[in-house]
Length: 513
Image (cartoon, rainbow, N blue to C red; front, top):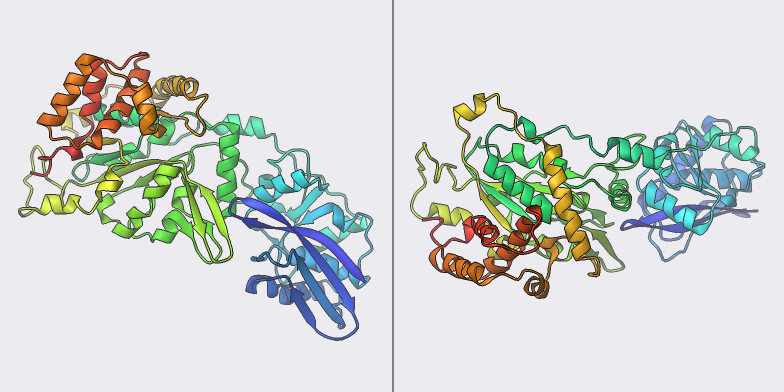
């Protein structure tokens, strides 16, 4: 007798429907076919223990489990529940009032029949709705995540007997419903860190506002304790709110990576990822035998903060160069290639030298000759070339720290950022995959960032006197276009260029002495 139902496998951030067939016939033994990995093959032991725990019998005849299509690699433990139900049905221990073939069934079984949560439920729910399935049967802890997808029944089950009773018609389980829009809009403006709690550093706040308004990458250079990390953590609060499509895409990535918490739903706030400098290149960009998203993909539509940038291994930093340009990362293996989105703002911080006190207004730098330049050289030129703003951070004075003057809040800054982004949305409405000034190509810079003669003279003088490199030219124009957007100006004026020029500290030939 043959039993059939459906599960799913996730590749990248997309799901594929897997047909699960179980047949009991003459002979002995348990056989699983269909390119299953070790975790899937071990389901035999989990399924058998769970069935026996509740008084059911594992068939002692030849039991064949087929996972189709057979040329797709299956991994993980999400196939336990469908295999168990098909085994009961094909051995005539389960009489179905509801058809197994109407549902996608997911879940890992513990030895006492309790269902454990799995990864990647959101893309599976999206694919299930697209394929016209009636619903999903899955662990209760994953139900809220799957219920983000409307027009499909999400049936939460706690244990194996619950699933059996549901299909036998003895138990009615209400589908989980989530009002996605209400939940999304209720939480999208909740941030723990606010710029109003930062005293002083007005010039740094201004630079970060420009970075947020144009989607620019930025690096902060300053001594220890000057507030670089504190400022970086507040950047998500001034970025424009996520749109629903952005939130859905971000949630899919976190779902695949297993980073959503219990009973989690839509990610409504922009991600902020801050990996430690000991991270490997695979952990940063993604990969592994079965490719998983890395930190740059988990920061998609948000901020990737690299603290103490020169302390990261050079190989780790270099693998970011292509994703920074293409806004995605492709991971290729012998039999597959998966693509993860990686459209993030890179915010980095670093000390100016090994001791941390080069250019400090009060403390003396104790680094030897050439040490400052050697420290800076840990970051390659091509990577610095992809960072638009170089911001020098100075320590805050006692008077500023002790001041009771209220600083500008993140909400006030965010209003200006949103206004500038709206101008860019209108500007690039006919451009494919270009959403902000930072994403402009060199050809678009020449077309859009037109400057007057006085501006050209200023830029020429700046490049000659400050020794700015040629790679700084386009960056200055992009940043000045953003500054003009913040000032609600259609043209790039001299003052906008002048402000943009000061954000190229590391391009100055004499910066490191």
